[in-house]
Image (cartoon, rainbow, N blue to C red; front, side, top):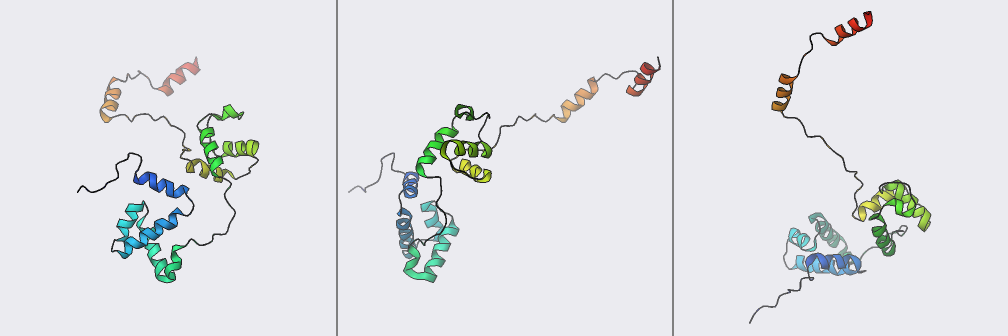
Length: 183
């Protein structure tokens, strides 16, 4: 009898991990699965690799479970202001950042923290700091780097050839200036 396998092209590890990020509480299930694998004898590096985590994250899970027991599975309450960057705004900003700021009446060539804060203030009445806007840009997968043109370094052979072909004048610059000014 042939063993069953998953062969649908969209059923990948990356897709499942992305879904776990989107579904509330899915990471609790992943953590339970991780604990079950650890109890079955898997090493922390193997569990980390499977779930796309760092080994240190799994080590922290182990330490937490050794201290708290079964309560380590549950997420603890994290106080703090909820993010203003919700899913709807993320999708909209993804579209916005793929276009030019000029399309939205902002007289700039490219998006950066200052331009994004201006956009959010105008169109969403959201006020955030420039550094936070830069973080959002990076979080959405965009880069803040501006392309730079670099000159290729000259080779030593090229420099020597240039110096050989360089024509020297009969008199240096200072002597030419003296002659020119004394007339």
